[in-house]
Image 1 (cartoon, rainbow, N blue to C red):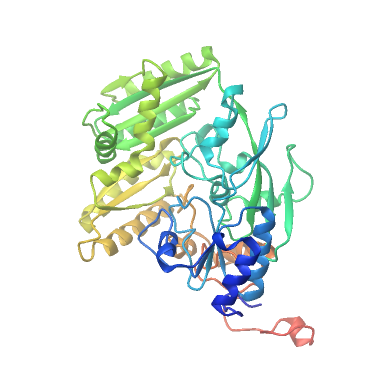
Image 2: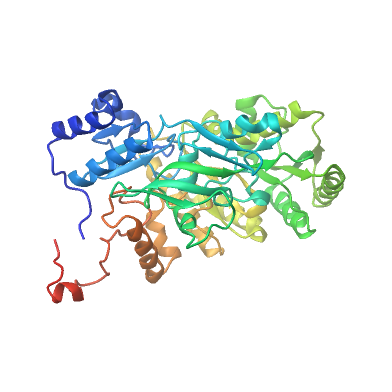
Length: 491
């Protein structure tokens, strides 16, 4: 089986064919315009694509995929380009398939609690479309104001409130998907527990390797009756981590509980003007549900935070002040640009009980490299987001930052965790997959991918540390029985 990497048609012929399929205005080939698509939100690795294609309908996507498959042109699906693992980074000789034009909300069914959208619809716009009726869409990445549903499905995006409400996979009921041969399939259905194999579960989080989502049916939730929020400060991340462990151990399930260390707080203050104090760590927690429940839960959580060593506990006076607190947290990634010329966002998971120890080890690793790390993360489920600060203009610092990021991922693995919680593996973390998974595990994952895309047309070179052609086994080549019998040939 051959990977789709060799163009069978001349570039000008390809451009004409794609233009005939989706319109010349939606085929980008100018080198200057292609620069925009060299990377996603992870900017320290760049590859310029050969073309960028902007289909406007599911039929356009099918046409593009068929032309690419015939010509042997790898396709890199792209949503809003906010990903942080290089998942939408082009590979050499590839065309980027951007779904940014497909931004229609197709159907809303509040009686059954779902909404059907195209992949380019912005995450927050899903909630805006139904908020007036008392509904919302739960997954809320920090980039929810700009990231798109197609990318969320590809990456299985989470967000601050995933502790209680789960990740994207818990909120996708159905999807229409274009496979690598241009066929259109429907997975799942608007009713829960669709019959048959749960292929939707394999698709969500597959990072564009299995198919291109052209429609998604999303589960909607009723807005909770009440939400209570508090912001607590601590001398260090040790006390803040103990507070998190104490709150969860008490049987409290917060809607969200976020932690920021001193550097992250400094950055958020610089970006938003919040009057947060200069402290070692801070927690921001939401409790939601019925009024009686959240009043009790929030009061109990504040007691536990004070017992763990909280210096101050603030409760917002109104919804506007509450939203400002969350703006400080959700702006943290971008805000770090106020205190560092360059930074690398990592994403790993550890057990909650290991938070304090792991943060101390991250600090030690950073000192050894002569760099700083700002930490802001979903403390309730141990999903770390260390931001490695460096200056790309200083020779060697970018390499040291990448090395430090890798050591942080290894620390997560050693601590019983994972190399990613919600940002995906993409190009950045593929090399660490073999440190977390056995060869047999990776081989099984590869077979699942090949069942969807046997020619590796879609997003090649991502996720797997040593990509193999579908059907190949590691080690010396051994002829397949079908080849020996003269029923197939290797080409």
